[in-house]
Picture 1 (tube, rainbow, N blue to C red):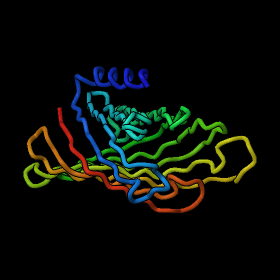
Picture 2 (picture 1 turned 90 degrees about the horizontal axis):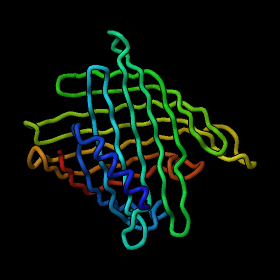
Picture 3 (picture 1 turned 45 degrees about the vertical axis):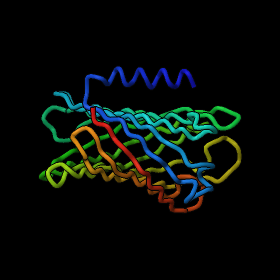
Length: 236
């Protein structure tokens, strides 16, 4: 876990030249869905977005303090780059997802995913909408070649006192992630996380993130899970 923390610190230093925020979420999902989490826990999220003349870069890191005595159990990272293609409104989207973790008695890796495809962003008044449709290479033990569609949104209301943001992901992956005998074919996964923030000052916000998923936590059923958090955010 020392290497995990050093990587997290390095990412913050690298992103220091950009717009960024740090979020703390109390996640009470054990009380709502004890089958997906052995305890309630805190998640720290560091998020950065940086536009430039060639496109934009977005990244976030989640640290889950979900082990006994509040120790860190999981780190998950996403880095995405949208690259302008001439004067076209369609950009090239490149993305990497991955992470590491620790259960009570063993460590594990969250399999890497590599995404590439077209993206499109547009402002509708004060509302920004972004979307991309990409090929997704899931580096499971048995590689899974998949497709993912994502939409993101963000807006400020009531003289910037309220911020609404979030994303919706819809993707496929192999039911069987190993070379052992098992179910064949694909499953479709839905994950969306709308956020609602009340901005006390330009820097300090309080609110909630509501994770809604289908077919995400369990292997092959279609259970829907709704996991809200209580959160605070500091905009740097």
